[in-house]
Image (cartoon, rainbow, N blue to C red; front, side):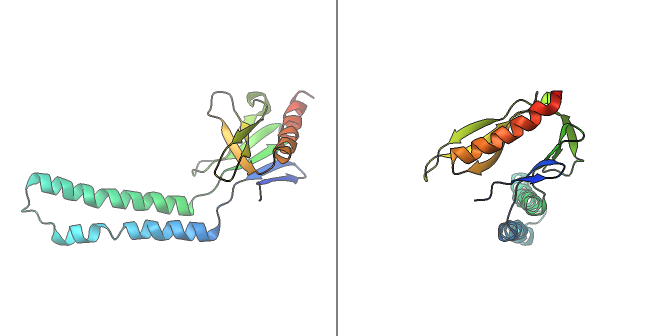
Length: 163
């Protein structure tokens, strides 16, 4: 199982990944959503009562919006984090098309290993909280020891902020 963490010369990096078959599947669903309004457009006319026109508008608008949402998911980027040693900050490239954000190490709480359960048994994620924000849950580890290794690596990186 790939966990998304890797070492680089300028600091630790984390990157989530969505496979191309999954992106293609979501894109096909998104494009198919645009076909749902076709029968409503064919059978609708201005002579219908107002409540049927309102229902018609909802049946046309919602699938189109959902299709746009699925296409955004398929074409969107994944979360990327870079623990920059030179600038002493966490550079966060979010999922939305916003510019990267630099978060000083002083605003980041030490990471925690969190245990989650599933049908296949427990798995472990790293919880990383930036002050004033919702905690990020990074990666998925099958072994607690592997999660602890990366937790300590990130904690060591953040501890060096005072030196």
